[in-house]
Amino acid sequence: KKKKKRPSGGVPLSPFVETMHYSIPSFSFQSQKSILRYAEMGCAFMVFIILLGAEGRQELAEAHYLMVICTCCLLFCAFALLADMYNVQIQYPDLWPLTEFALEVTFMTLSFFAAVTMASACRWAYNDDESFCEHFLHSNAKGNISAAFGLFLSGAMLASVNVTYKRVRKYAY
Image: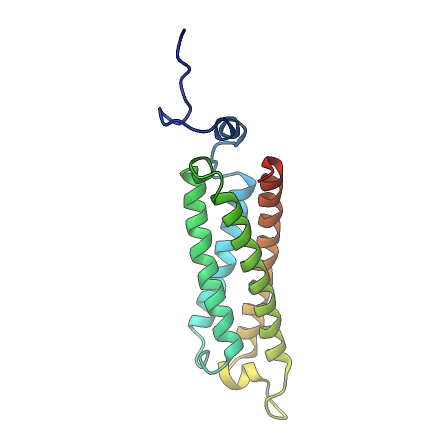
């Protein structure tokens, strides 16, 4: 009998992993998931840059939380893109897709509520003539733009969650 060559390069895998290996598309920089990662990283980076240049972001809790959440999301998206490039979902089929899904849902929720609270802080009056953003960030535009990019980040994460959910549901983890 001729030995069947394993797709994993000689490492024995379970039958589930071997069948899953053939159904997962190979990585592409133009795939839907990759484009969503680029959009997520772009939005998170814009929030980071806008709030990094804002004076007084440490005094306004909403700005500080939005910056921290978007920085963590930026790091997650970069590592997730690398994981997609190196096909981690094939090497760790029981761990990575569910972990990716959980982190995407977490960052989607956190970025949405952080952006809403940041936008609300720019609407609330600190004094009679200025908002919290004007008082602490010295600009209402910085707060509103960073909140808008936070909402765009949440929307991109929602689309990414949908793609990951379909992948997770397909293999019935």
